[in-house]
Amino acid sequence: MDGEDLGLIEDSGAPEGGESGGDGGEETTFIEGETETETETPEGGEGGGAEKSGESEEGERGRALPVQLRQALRALSEQNPEFAKKFPRIERQLTAALFKAGQADKMGGLPALRSAVETIEAHGGPEGIRELAETAEASRVLEEGMNAGDPVLASTWSESSPEGYKAFGRPYLEKLESMDLAAHDYTVAPDMVRTLTRTGVYDSMADLETAIAGEKFEDVQRHFQALKKFFLDLRQFGSSVKGPDPLKAERDRFDQERQQFATEQTKTFYGGVRGEVNTQVMAYTNRLLRQELHGRKIRLETANRLRKQINEDLAEAVNTAEGYADRYKAVMKQNDHGKAVQFITAAARTKLPIIVKRVLRDFNLAGGTPAGGPRRAVLAGGRGAGTPATVAGRPKTGDVDFSRTDKTAWLGSLNLGHGEAWLKNGKKAKW
Image (cartoon, rainbow, N blue to C red):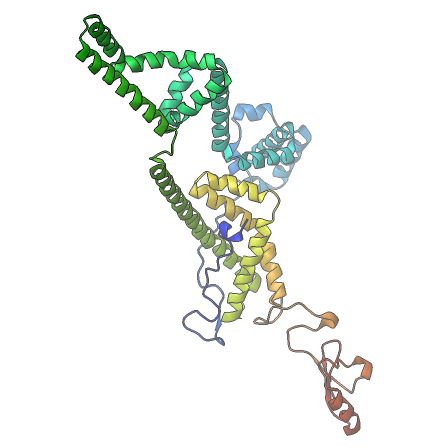
């Protein structure tokens, strides 16, 4: 699956050096605004989730805490009045928590519940499960109707898909004729009688019989020619029906337009989801970066490269997570904008803290490392991106890094008594 489909790799920031108001040497804080806030509910306050979601008081009394734990809590409250004031409902909250944990264990524990939730999400959530159940029931009814030859099936089919129902008529009769000729004739005989009656064939035959009996040769000739023309036209019509469908091109064009419309709708939906995901993920990324940088400033081009690398690493981590691709497809099929955004951002938020720390470390921006250095790994011997330390005294030849020190200059310094050289530990020696 492409990372772009997740709305995670699109670089919503300006290209390197492309932001207004500065050049490559300008220093700027990486984040200028915060779009995401967090609220905390005090423990034991009126907004405590355990109280609101707990069982009734009667149910809680029936599932009280173990005696020893309840006695310990009450002893602690007596010894520490401040604790009792701060957590006045701790006993009820723990009772509710233990009850919920017990219920989870009865259902197989958290792994089983997590697996069940992932399976449900992979099939489109509760709504998708309901649709699958309806589809299965419809398939069962269809199969029973086909086995029993239920005429209600034909009526339902003609109402739900009239074009498909009409297109199926001739293939059905042709297949029936090849399978069982008697059954075919039995099926079409009533229709043939109705058609011949409706088109006046039987009336023409009666008129022809009367003309013959009365020896009215002109009437005989006229009625016979009428019957002959009817059957010749019928044969020609039957031959043309077996030829190419004259309306096929029109139907194909209509289907193509319908597919294009559906494609545009899908693009619009994906684009809306991607845009909102980018906004939320970038806001969370900015907050993590502020926390890790501790107010330090970095260069503009470094900020752009940093943000781009985080997006790329995040897309790779999310897309390759086990089971994510299947759940992503199932969620997007539901065409629910809010649910799709929530699903993708939740997956991104679980990966972002580790990725931000790793990228900052690769850019030598973690901890006390000076800001603005290039993204490169620390080389063997401790050589990094910062300014190397300088040591005094002429080093031994075996300690000199000749990949960075000119050999001719080194040999010349032996006679001069002064010079400088890079060491294999990344430091610079001067004497």
